[in-house]
Amino acid sequence: MIKMKRYYFLLLLIGLSLACRNKETKNVEVKTKTFMVDADTILIDTLLISEKDTAFVIKPKVEQDSSLQEKKVFEINVLFSNKKWPTLNFKEAIGADLYLVKDLDGDNRPELLLRPEWFSSCWASINLFSIKDNAWKLVKKGSMYYCADEYPLAKRIEEKESKYYLITDSLADDKFIINKNEIKF
Image (spheres, rainbow, N blue to C red):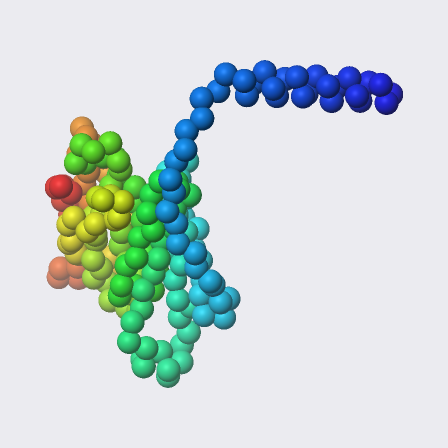
């Protein structure tokens, strides 16, 4: 039995050395930020933004107390499992809904839609970001009516013939109206 284990171990070592022998290696520079997270004041949301990519939204823990109004700045930071993507910092948000869109500007990198969460109101901004000079840059900003939380941003984006459309709803004369607008780069 011991000889058999040694035999399997030897086969495993030979297999690993053969598998690694002809592989090309590359050095990839990765710039990331380190965040110290206090569980009493910070929450982390994990969002799956594609089959292979995850976003981690580091956001303030919002509580219902009187000192909340005294706080001047609320901001979030978004880290990505894809280490080639930089950290995204967004002010005036207590959370975010994200949607990764395909390359819109022809630079072989995806763009990112971010809808920040805020305390109240059905109006929300919708922000299109692109990676430029190793940082997320705001390319376009719009607004949307967003009161139905059961429809996250991913369910409000429609792709048709290489174009993206944002589906929004509005209230007019006590009736919901559905709008579909093309997201133009």
